[in-house]
Length: 236
Image (cartoon, rainbow, N blue to C red; front, top):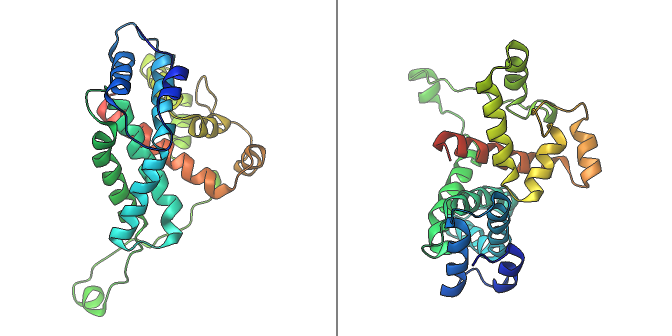
């Protein structure tokens, strides 16, 4: 018997982030059944993601307290943690506790986020003039040029439209569709859902239409980019 994701949502208490044995059995049945439709599998994963948000907030709070992280990075860290939870849910088969299974994924992404957001310290005199260390100077990138796939997809689309390229496009579209709607909506407001061509609308107009700031757009697109890279690198 396969339970619908709607019924599963009613069975998962949103105030806690733990599934009991019966709920784990339902999830295992949906995720491992050979005839489970893809849309039902994706909806079940989204139900799990939404149900585990309180647990995710707790993980971010504990991480910040343990590493003395300022409030300014809280939202950024939450997006890194969300990527870790997404990765865990994509590979979760219901054979164990999702909280325990996702903990390492979330912690790894939080540490990566902390590493990427930590500002570089200036080189001291010895490093600069005696050892002659070289570092790249950071520079600002506009939101219009932020998305990493733009130039690559346009170059390959203009060069040729072979089957390998089309397969890559279809794979990326499936990956994005498997993400929660708040991420996929942002992605497809910027890129065509058929061939991933960039739409003519500007980022500013997209943010106005969706009702959030450019900073929120940047964070969500970064989560999508990292998740696509994660799935492509591991062929999952």
